[in-house]
Length: 440
Figure 1 (cartoon, rainbow, N blue to C red):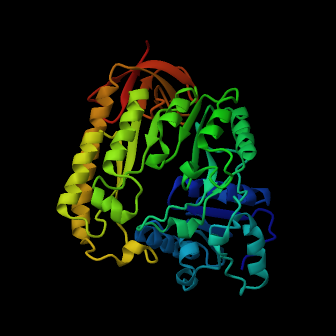
Figure 2 (figure 1 turned 30 degrees about the vertical axis):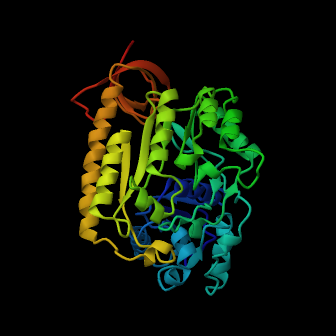
């Protein structure tokens, strides 16, 4: 092994999967930086490689394994740390990967340096995966210095209690644990003081925020954050549809910083498929929720996730999903193919759909998503909008996002990175997936 006492040690991170993984990786990066490590690109030679894995699909597993082996090729003497969901769910599988030096699941990642030291003293110290299903407390893995340029992700929650028949996440992340409200407020105050005007509240199942505390929920938290001077935008991650009620929508209307972008996870537009998935709503209930949103937020962006090829999904059931997506008029649809996950109920369901059929359905729904996206942009044509411009734009062409998360291009010689301008936005053929901003 390399001498870990050298003055400038190097660590490289590879983060796979969701935004929550990104947050967790950045928190671990701070731990390494505090210990004197330099963060380098994953393609460079480093003393330590950390692969923060994903296991939502079998492709996530494959990519995780590929990155572990790639790291060892980059530096055979490095310490290879596999952490995260894939490790948590399949420790015996990861243990067989010779390139992996130590394993940490989705708990105690804040102790990663301690585990590395233990492994370097005794290479038999390799497996640090704990029983995540017994976890009750939110792990204090916190970012003190946000490195993004325009908006800051704030992790408020961990775990999921839903146990949909297809989903491995509850087994990877454990039960719902909510971050203390005071800790969330403190982190938001820090990022606002650093100049950030927009935050995104993220977690594994943020609609469950506060469920384990029982004295406040997500809307209570947002109302408190809305009082922080300088915080102009609060954006939400993915929401369970039935979290949305008339009472909560009315409270959201009163939150000045709330951005009207609702990512409601649909999964299927077929009632029978939803029942097999173990989802807790019907297409009719979902549509009613959307109608209530649009009554209060007429130009709200409503985006979603849809799974194709769930076991037993017939052509008729898939066509029901296509028709339902048209009816809802989503802004964007994140389309993904069902992936059999060992340990979930759906893995043993009969009538597994052929991969070629899944691919064909995925293409059809993706084409529809593009069509619906164009239609939504036309609805916003000519509207006034407040646009937050990204801090990484160059030259005279700047790109930002409206409150309902539509990308907007605006030409000016002025430096407007990280600022909010009110513009009139137009739909043009030159940029079919973006709007063009002009002065009012």
